[in-house]
Length: 87
Image (cartoon, rainbow, N blue to C red; front, side, top):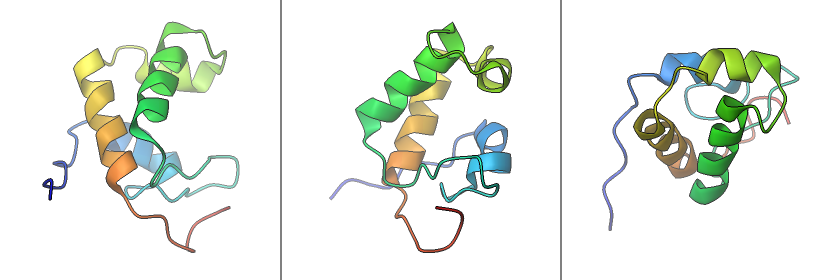
């Protein structure tokens, strides 16, 4: 069984809206807990690179490296969704 990923250093960038465990803290933010790793990794790159035109996301993750995005994607994909948070 694989070890759980370490908490990313840049988690605070995401946690304000998406929650530390991937359960959204605000109504407009999607839950990320348990999403597929490849989906999260690619979505984060698309936000950063502007292929997904969401200015807030691009501002937040614009300076984030591929390695940091990978850590964030691994973290959120390893989290277990719960009934808490916003749907």
